[in-house]
Length: 165
Image 1 (tube, rainbow, N blue to C red):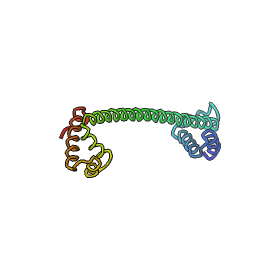
Image 2 (cartoon, helix red, strand yellow):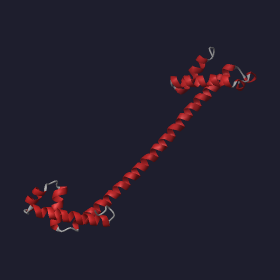
Image 3 (cartoon, rainbow, N blue to C red):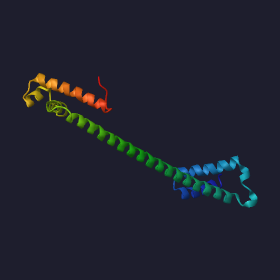
Image 4 (cartoon, helix red, strand yellow):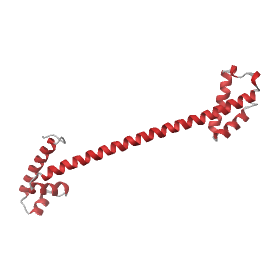
């Protein structure tokens, strides 16, 4: 280790361009030599040549592994993005359908009921303000709103968007 680790580290660092990953590769190479000494055959070449080949191979394997992981993560991200877009489209379509059903139910109300509900709920006005705007008694406005809301509730329940009380 003392004789060859510096050269192996320099090679791994050059291939990987990262100190930490280079240290890991050198550690793997020497640990593998320690646990599997039969892998090195002195008849096939010098120990230094064997270590160079192992270090280069491990470094390249590390790069390929990280590239494959990155590609998998990118593919997963693209799939998630498509699913999210699909879900968003589904939500938008459903919201559009619901708004059309509500709009149709509102148009089925009498003019007085619709005006009172629109001013109170969509305009944010109080019963008293709605009564003043429509020049009607407050009790009449409350009755029209209550009657209109009951009709809306029934219409929306029939369309599958709610339940009747």
